[in-house]
Image (tube, rainbow, N blue to C red; front, top):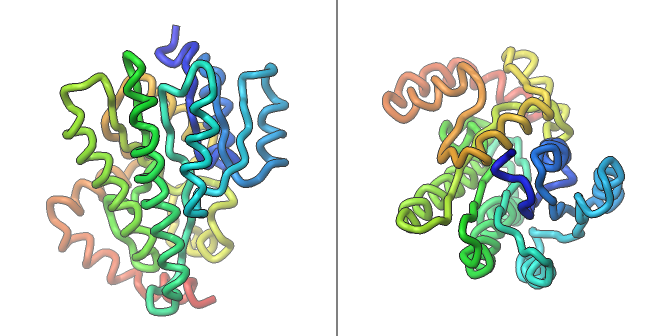
Length: 264
């Protein structure tokens, strides 16, 4: 029996590429999934793949300042309430920092970091009523290794990683777990055509969403605190933490490629 069997999981970003695959993998592990997203048609299609009640679609926009509070009000009426929160929503932002508008930068940070903070904060009383509960952030390699062309996005993911690490230490003597799990590049529509072209030129490996979801669900079920998917990304993230100068030199050589695709 899976550790997720019979539990209710609140998953944000469920209508995205990894999100949809996560819905399927979580249901396969025995969970009921409250699937939160902005694309109603996509959420309904995911729900239709499963037995009635296994996927509960909820339309919400976490980029809206009122979005997290509205979502918490909705899920607090569920029985049972969620004992696992998976933060799978994200907004991408490929481009040179100087060309990004202040409004775009603010929206990015609000969506990727502030909305997650607000949602965790509001859900803590519900999560702590359960004998065992978890908050899981789906991060990114760029949350450990900042990349040119993704400076603002990297900042938002570094912030999310710091939040989860701090909370894990703050609640270390409770049954509430905090997990930060990082996919590498994944074949989904999250990647713009420019990013896809850059990845091909730089020979960046990309994973299938179903494979990523299977690894994430296994890590969620086991309570794994940290995980970076993929090699050599796992190695590069560690090198960046210990010897960032080596990564600086490697990325400086690839900067012309990044600039060309960011401006295309």
